[in-house]
Amino acid sequence: MLKMKGFAMNEGEKNAPWLDTPDPQRFIKNAAKFNDLMMMYRCAIREVQTKLEVLDDEFSVEYKRNPISFIKTRIKKPESIYRKLLKLGYDFTAENIQEQLNDVAGVRVVCAFIDDIYTVANLIAGQDDIKVIKIKDYIKKPKPNGYRSYHMIVEIPVFFSKGKTPMRVELQIRTNGMDFWATLEHQLRYKKGIEDLPGYAEISEELLRSAQAVIETDNEMQQIKNKKYPTAIENYTGDILLVGISYDKNCKEHQCLIEKYEKES
Image 1 (cartoon, one colour):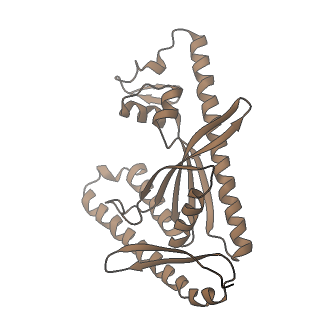
Image 2 (cartoon, helix red, strand yellow):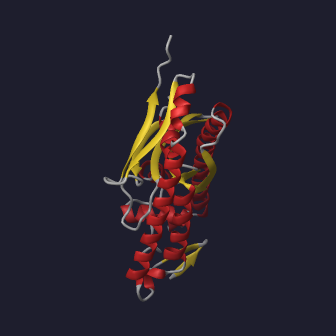
Image 3 (cartoon, one colour):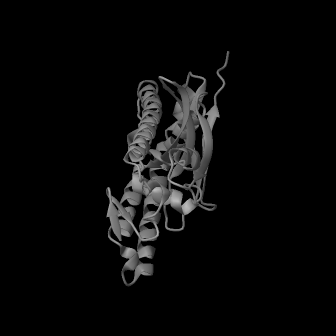
């Protein structure tokens, strides 16, 4: 294994196009272009984060509660970007990063309840300057390892001195319980290397059981929250009512109950 500029490379990677820099000026130019692109992704993250914070502030005033517990952001590391492009069969160029990858910029939104996830997702999708590229609902259909989250790839315009540029950002929206499990599972599986340990299959089953326990807790808390809505409907005076979410234990599915409430004239 070779190391260069903080990157770990095997023998097959050392001759990759992005490392072929016979001219120092070419290397500097490419590095500057990469840094410019990462700056643009950071700006895109700020645009999305601001929208989320505005919505959360509005809810704190209008509904006396905050659907968002906290927000985390990240830019994919250069090594991860390079390896993903290599896996997809593309050269490490600024153009390929922007055109072929959707998850360079990431925003994780952690909510209190399951229905908050769908509320936040719908409100973001409903903004006229945001284009939804892709949705993966791992809440309704969890991954085999137990992972649950709501993923959105969105495109948002960012205004720079040279004009408007559409930038893509990945949103991961989940509850506190889902985030707790996913964070620890990632540390155990990838940081601690449990995949190389004897009895890995048994460990995977234990992680899956812990994920099921989180699911049950999330659903119980949601059911408790939903009990207050009959009074809320009776006393509501606005146009849109965020009713909540129902959960059917028999079919293991969530049904979003975001409804329009018509006021009597």
